[in-house]
Length: 295
Image 1 (cartoon, rainbow, N blue to C red):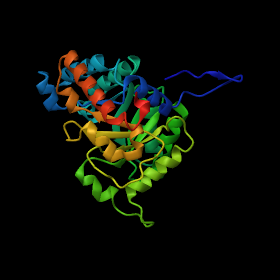
Image 2 (image 1 turned 90 degrees about the horizontal axis):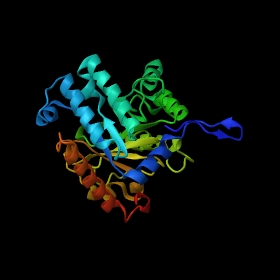
Image 3 (image 1 turned 30 degrees about the horizontal axis):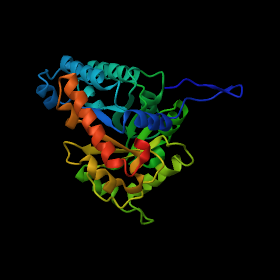
Image 4 (image 1 turned 90 degrees about the vertical axis):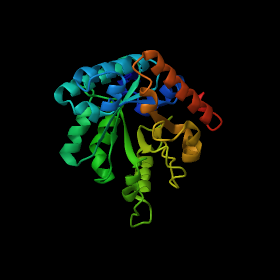
């Protein structure tokens, strides 16, 4: 994260996450790579389903990709399942990836109220925390207002959040496409809140939405002036060519996310890099005609 700079005799705050993300995507390409060390991938890499295997997997992925992709997204649950030693590996993974130049989005999907939400915010969005990340995923289904401690912490620290809106899992529809009293879907209510948080931000707001790349035409208003994390490419069946149809005019703000589609090419660093470059180039080819900023 950029250090504060002096402006007119006063110190400004950290550079906002949205600006840092826009620059990273413009220079490194629009791609987020997940770090999902679940048991089947550890086995496919010839590693044990233990802390040693977890550490080797995470370190290899970071060493292969952190100096060239825009965003790395460790899934917290796959580290947490090993207890305190797994969390220690997550701490090193986040720190090493950020030191190598990647933005780190910790996929934790936290959501709670009051002091508990404030504690989650301190965990992931306070620069003094060992798990401090450039951004974190959040669940808004205790009410968007319950996220206020995290939204405020992110804004103060130059970090970002990605809020679940229209997820790629089929079960999500029963909640996300339910109708609010004013006739909007709950997903649209969330998206409208996100748009309000990002009002006036340039070049990109720091509050993002999670919208699955597998959904086809969502029928939702996705122009939230913030990034749109798009999981589902690769193993879940979506392709980069699907992105313009899903995101329409908002496609220029999409952060396509790929996990198994790249990770299955390990454990060699070279094949991991080649797979990431292929996906990045496919995304650019699919989006360039809609958004010159990806060039």
